[in-house]
Image (cartoon, rainbow, N blue to C red; front, side):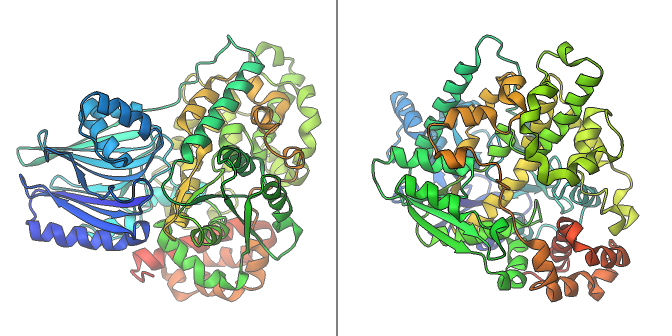
Length: 635
């Protein structure tokens, strides 16, 4: 795992480029403390690349930027190509002079052999930039699911990119300012949609996308396109047993590839289905070698402590179990640091325990596997069942269930409705505006956080742009066939990248490589073809996944019904240990003069924080972000 940066500037002198790239690299050192390097194109003097290295694969020979033997193609790369050994054999057979076992060198010559089509060959997580001297072109790409980050800014005269936004700001090409469209996205979802960031003129390369920057007559021509998306053509030729067996095969193969490392590795372990599956499969493949697991919990009561299940899994596979209880007293000190590391706030308060568990892991290993993505892929969120319950009611009342090819019936979901006992407020909120409206409106109500918070902000944020309209463009993609596909497709495209941003930043903050084997693109593509009434059979959470791993993990974990993600006692902290800190930030003169908050409404909501902790969390993070990046406080 690494940090990458680069600039193309047709008007800058080489000395200026060197200073700017060095400043960018300095902000990325936490991503790659093992080594650093840079490259200046000798032909133009206007192209420079920088790299910070965390050495994982072939530590001795993988220094970057890396250039082909003829000096014509140079790469900076962040990520891991898990099928690099297979590609290495193929490329050597095609007479490419690959001398190391570095996945970077494999990627470099894969581009030499196949050009942009090399992307179809890659299994892994990646964000990279390749400078082709002969074509005078910079080729940039990001992995299919957005596991690794890539940001950029551009004008007609310059193009600057980096693994993190703070590095782009360090290049001094632009001044940080807030984008109001993105603020609306953030208030609505607590993340931004599409290629937007909270910063004006700073964009993210979206998952599954590539771009090229060509030097043509001393002008920059930027072209952008999507190279990958999911195909939901349903496989009606196989039965449920086939889908279960094939998913089990893909899971095992993915975990096996993700174990490829030349340094020590372990795994996050929460005690849920996803991380337990990764741990149990990994230990079975390591033939008795020591394998460390890392678990986090809180002292605030059993609702915030799942160590019992995590210990049970670790003991069942003879793993070395490590745990940490998250210190509430550090909240005020750690949150500003994490907002700085995040570049922009995204998702919920889970980044705090995730950081502390990553910090624990980094004391023991350099690579950690996790279960990220399981809820989106395998239909694990309670909101999916809430939405389907309404659809099943409609089908039962109007006798239309049999008219829909992949429908889930009301009688089949009844055995699993007790799962919703803790989600009655979600049901009440979802149905408050009435039943049986359009599917996109119904799901939007389940994920929209602005209904209870819009009044906390200036009305200007909600003018001239519609987050709902952009949401609709994703949710209503053609040929998704069913409600469950529409919901999970939106989450894979929108909310999952936000969670992966948290995954990336909390691990990179402590120089730890985090791998997510459940998000192998082959698994994602396969699940898109499974008939919805099979992968969400009886409305059961993670039905197909449970069948595929039922002989892999301990029965008490397989059958548990109380998994709540990584719950955090944020409302207790807001009332107790963090109260003074939160009030100082939210009700300070700076916040009052910001011009984007309704402070009186925030004060009223804060008094009923037992209901709105996640909303106050969103306001708190946004104000900290303004202080750190827009006001220039830094960290």
